[in-house]
Image (cartoon, rainbow, N blue to C red; front, side):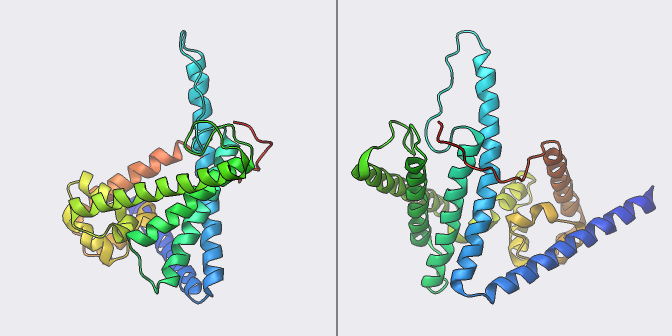
Length: 271
């Protein structure tokens, strides 16, 4: 069985290295593109991720509502705000939110000469929050972006968009400030390693956080981790085994909850 395990490990390592190489090639190609093209690609990627996430959350909402409806004496759950509702509506909302947030973050960074800080993040979040409010109004949502009655009239819609954008920006800035206060680190940089840092903290391996950053093992690399990648960032055998066991358990859990990658099409307004 040992030779089989070794060959499987090598095969997984080869796949991980191939994916990492493709990712590096894509990032190199992206850097060679003009700023508008790069922003458009990032926005499209954000829209795809947001739609998949939104559809999954919407399906979960439907399941919870169906379960609640079978409970005696339990009033029906009322969908409130842009982060609730049926799958296709929520998919559209999160697609727009993610696309605007990702695109604006990159556009602001480019405009400011590569600077990434709380101010830039808050500006991007303001735009994303405003877009979320506007898409709800455009699709005839019965509630406002943050719940309550839907705004009416041009002034009401514009006011709700500004208010929602400001709320998202302020909350984002507050969370990032609190993160800096407790960690003494720049949250705008560490946000790319948030899940990896949480994993290392759970395993009691916080001391290897700098190894992850040195090797640019950002959150989107976590499920691709293999023994050779961890060796390259100089993590010892014992911690490597703990990390790989955690990653393999996460992969197994995700494989038991498959999600369709189809992009849903928005139907007639319903909420």
